[in-house]
Amino acid sequence: MTLTGANTTAPTSATRVSLAGPTADAMSAALDDAVAKLAAVAECPVSSPPSQLDESTLLSMRLLEAMAIAPSRSESLRCLVATLASLCPDATVRGGLGNARLTRFVDSRLGWLGPESTLQQKAAAMWDGSPHRRATDKSNEDQDQAAEQTGLQRASVVRRDHTIEIRLPAAEGNGRCVVWIDGTLGRIEWLPATVNAINAVLWGRPSRSLPTMAINVAKRSTALLSICAVLLALATLWPVPYRVACTARVETAGGRFVATPFEATLLAAHARPGDAVSAGQVLLELDGRPLRLEREALSAEIGQVSKEYDVALATRRIAEAQQAELRKKQLNRQLELITDRLGRLEVISPIDGIIVSGDLDKHIGSPLEQGQTLIEVAPLDQMRLEIDVPEHEIAFVKVGNPARVKINATGGPSIRMPLQTLHPQSELRDEVNVFVGSIDLENTDGNLRPGMQGDAIVYGPLRPWIWSWVRGGFERILWWAGY
Image 1: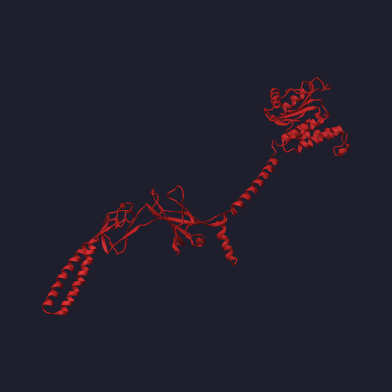
Image 2 (image 1 turned 90 degrees about the horizontal axis):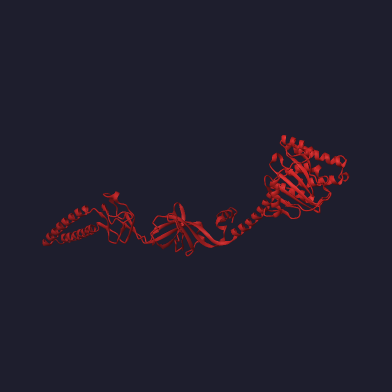
C-alpha cells in the first residue's frame, strides 16, 4: 500500500516502542501503567483537576474515553482514526481491523470503505504481505522474545520514513488492528506512551453493537406493531356480510319410500342398496299362500250362502232370502279384497332411480306390518342440501341469502348458491333446535350421496367483521346487564 505525504523531520531508521499486549490480566495492568505514565508526564497526582494536566495528557484521556464509550470495536477504531486525523490535519489516517485477512477498513476522509475500494485492496495486500514486522533495534529483541514466551503479542508504534504504523494485536493472536498515519505529523508525541492503553480499550469493546442492534430492532418492531394494530383495527371494523355458521347434509330430491301394502310375510328381495331400478321393476315378493287359502275358504262359503238363498227364495222365506243375499255380498267384497292383495304380492318401484336404503336379505321370512317402510328409491341426478340454521341466528337469515356449502366427503370447491327455502317452524335435530333451509341442485357428476354431511355459511346483512365472533358474548353481557 502506498501512503503519500512527507515529513522531513522524521528519522530514516525504523524505531518501535512496544508495551505489553492485552490478556485478561495484562489489560488491567496496561491500563494502570498507562494512567501512571500519564500522571508522571503531567507531573501531578492522578486525582488532580483536569486544568492542572498538560495538553498531551488531556488528549490521550479524551481519546481513551471516546474509544471506551464506542458501542462496538469498529466504532472504537473509527474514533481512534478520527482523533488522530484531527491532530494531524495534513496527514492521511487510515485504519484496518481483521485477523488473517483485512475485514474492515476506514479512512479519515472517506469513512468506511468496502472490499471493492482500491485503497482497501492495497491495504489488504500490505496486510497479508507483512503480518507482524519485528523491530530492528536490538533493545526490543529481548522484550519480543519474553512476550512470545508468555504467549503475548506486543502493541507498538513504528516510524518508517514518512509513515507511522500503529500495531494493535489482540490477545492470543486471534485478531489485529493496524492504523497508518501518512503525511505531515501533528501533536502525537504522547502516542507511544498510550498505545498499550489504546490497545486494551480497543479490544475490550464488543465485536458488534448489540445494544444498538437491539434498540433498532425494538424501534422497527414498535413501528411494525403499530402498523399491524392499525390494520387489525381496520380489518375488525370493516363491514362485511354477517356470517351464520350452519351444518349441512345431503338428502334426495323427489325420492319415494316403498312400504308394505298389507300384512304379509317377505318371500324374496330382488334389489339391494345401490342398484339402479326403473319404474315398474319388481323389488320384492310377499308370501301369498295365506291369502290363497283364505280365498278358497271364501269361495266355498259364498257357494254355501248361494244355496241357502236359493232354498229360501223357493220356499218363499223372504226374510231368510234377504239375509242370505246380504251375506253373499259381504263375502264377495272380502273375496275381491283378497284377490286384490294377491295381485299386489310383487312390490314394484314407483320411479326410476337408485335404491338408497333398504337391505331386506336378512328379513326374508319375517312378517311385515302394513305401512312399514321397506325401501327408499331416489334419482341421484337431483339432490337437496338441507341447511340447519341455529335458532338464535334465524333473524339474520332470509330466503335468497347467499350460502356457501362445503361437503366433507367430496373435496374440491365449495357450493355457492342462494338459499331457496326456509321452514317456518323449527325442528329438533341432534338435540339442537334449528330451522331447516334447503337448496336443490343438479348432481351431474354423481359425487353427492344421500347422508353426506358438511359445513355451511349463510351470509346475512352487513356487519363489522368482528361482530360474527363477539355477538354471542356481547348479547349475553347485555342480558346480564338488564337490557
